[in-house]
Length: 303
Image (tube, rainbow, N blue to C red; front, side, top):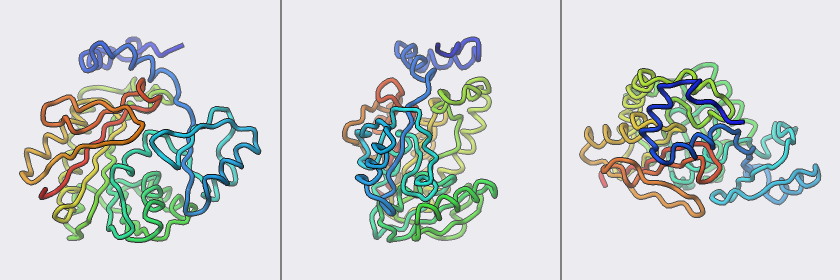
């Protein structure tokens, strides 16, 4: 039985009916049910064949995540927090959160900043794509969350990453400049509604606007941390225009040399940004790929 969104939050219902129009009912139906479990094979420690054999040996049915070679959907109630997971052979991660690192396109020679890195899902994914070469700076402002970040980096065998604990809103003041920056921003988390209905209960436009103000500070800092021709990937797991297209429009208005680049991911259905300036951004709706909601933009500096 799905969530009664109107009973939970009338303000949420009214806003999203206006946002999604005729797609609203499908959207609500999709976020009202938990997403399938998924894992990412950590190729720094294991091969995909090894993990697939492990799943088969435990009678676990699984399928390939179409847009991520290392990603597997698990179609059973198998408890994934196994010794193999704790040793870092694979990482429990939602299928949609595997997309921003793919769009970042990390290479073994890059110097990369993950500005809001905890708990480390995307940092560890970036590190495996880099083959533990190059350099990642993983920043997190919260002491509690930075501990989780360090633990995940260690268990996944990541050795090319420096961890910092600083306020991401002023990170540019340290003077370091990066080839690529990932900003997976703190947000209203509507993508997680299937497992956490409280995100709908506490949703309000006032809260969205407060988060938007934080996101604007973070994206300004992230952009200024880029070298010329550097790439910024901005992402959220939420739906509101104020936290998504509105943030990118703010960036374009503030920086004349920022350009949104087109995003193409094989085997993933995406929708364009909903404003004229953000058509090259992508929205990932839960009904299209059986995923969380996501918004992603790829921006080049001094294009």
